[in-house]
Image (cartoon, rainbow, N blue to C red; front, side, top):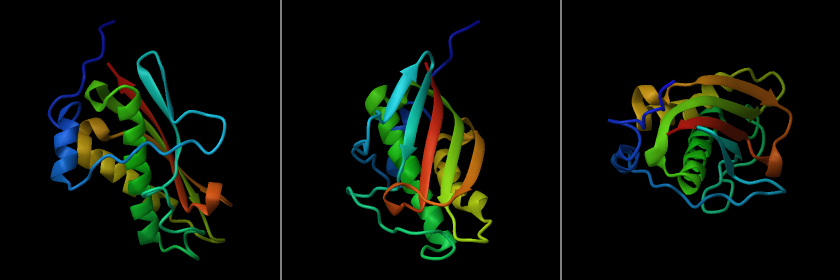
Length: 163
């Protein structure tokens, strides 16, 4: 078995340039809310803990998508979650070691009857595609839940392969 190769083109060290082209900067890693770490490496994988859509230490919106938060706002919040996940990966191992985004799980605090979770989680999926191209395409689950920590509308966790 050969060792994985860091991404080239739209990924790895080029991810920083691509983020800048998109007008994005990596935020500070969101501090854990309880007894866990933002990300952990095991072998060639980084497992990122659930990331809330924190911006400058605050949630831009709270509540349930489909009631208090529009689906469009939820999609934007999912992008923030993905950016926070990239910050956690970068702080642990550096984006230059990224080989592939493998799996994304998105949780959407959903109003009764709201079934648009996949479209909301697309905000995170599209960010990874925008930054990493084909190497940002991933397996995914989009799950509707009753509540999320701090009243967040969206939470995202990520598994990434590294070299």
